[in-house]
Image 1 (tube, one colour):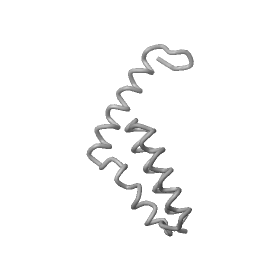
Image 2: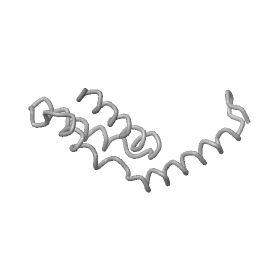
Image 3: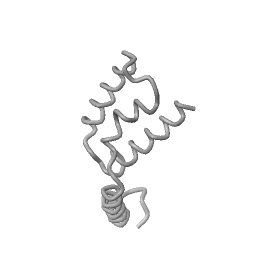
Length: 88
């Protein structure tokens, strides 16, 4: 159950931070590497501990809404440009 909970939180992080927010992947990669090391060293022993080490990367609801609106308008504009394989 702990791992399932953490995986759900990691999906939230990936969607809000990287997919919608399109934030720097290098920052996320570096943080995940540090967290992985802390798990290996048994400094982080639970899903909650692990999430606490990552949660500050997750955009808050207001920022997520702004990022999502920008993401949605960008994707809508791309669909209308006649790219191959896309409907206009």
